[in-house]
Image 1 (cartoon, one colour):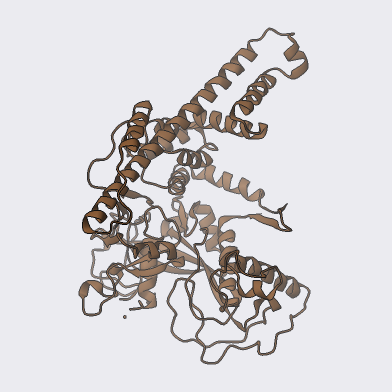
Image 2: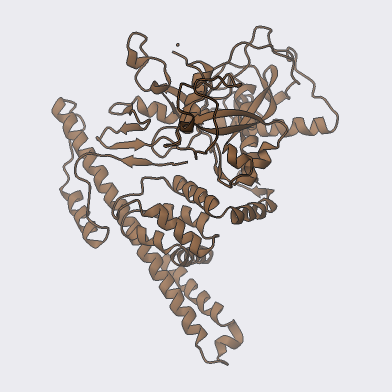
Length: 576
């Protein structure tokens, strides 16, 4: 799958290479830059404001590339100093006091780190981490550090690459790094966020060396665990290191419970809420989304402990079956489905403060080709909301007793999703499902919020009398709640082009194109053109059989007891 965006900003783009000359140029521009009158909202005033904003953003782009250049120079200097120190210590004559009393090479490096800590005015451990990072990145992925010098990458990008590549064979790491960087000319930014770049590196590593990827996956799984850490103000942190699919399932179960267990909670009360405290009535009615998830975690663990002990929580008065005409809640971000029968659910604990609701499905989606599923190749699968996983991990998930499968048609040349389902203001469930499969994430450049956690937004505002404003797949795009709101701010515009890419234009006139995600295609023998499939959610048009590919989508489902509420979108972005 390709993740990234293209900077199509019109006009002059800074071409000066990062370095002292660019820094001097930027300083001069900052001094000479005009400041438009904030109170002037005339046509000329608005034009002057937009021009000044665009120029300021251009200078900030230059400063960002200059910062990366300085950071790369510092890492190169640190690595050179450590290398010289090690070489000198190794060539010291035997029997010197340093060797006899302080440990030789290690002591020499410790001495340099201690002096750097004083120079940088940081703690010794902080200096040690910075030295270790510089040595590891310069020696492990030198091509990425060089890309910082010419403006293609920032330090965050190089750190993200290092987290993936430093564990690989050096030759493989160099091959992947070169492959990721060669398509970007020197001086031009990579047009990927650090997370997108790391995902691309991880995906390529799995594809090029699946055996090593499986070994690393098994080794990491052995390190799984739950840890407790003390925090200030009577708080503590619980962290869990888990396989990605289980972590996604856990988070979405907690999130689903939190969204429905107290539907009357405001989205967030903020720190100014009067008399809000843990256990207070004010706190339970003024909880942020994150606080609701924290409470849901405690609720679900408590319910599990009670169930394991054979006990049943006592329901509050009125807690029990949902109203017979109530509609079950949809998956967050998905439209409500047709009315189904509801059934009683176990009561929720006192913290829930809401009527119990029938168990609902929480889904974890995995996209994997049929060849990979059958063991014919080792192409990486895509865990939606996380990123690439090994073929072996996908096959283990496929063996889950709760797994269900759906065929998804893709274009063999581009790999883009062609169709998933059927063809009002609110899209039908099949159309919404198709859009989310097609785009996978929020369409804002660089945003990785999964499509199933996003609003479905009309790119051209809904107008049943205007063909371009209809509710159709080509006029719908998943936008996370934050970027959905940004889209409607003054000066922003969004357009989908015939190739499926989405072009965002900023108030300053900069343009960024989000490329549609591409799923890895596969070769199969498809049924004759126009024939129907067993799965009613998949439709085809007469197309040559060799122009179709099939990607199988695997869904893991787990029930979670929830409380009654209206179907609403999320209040904030999920971390995956």
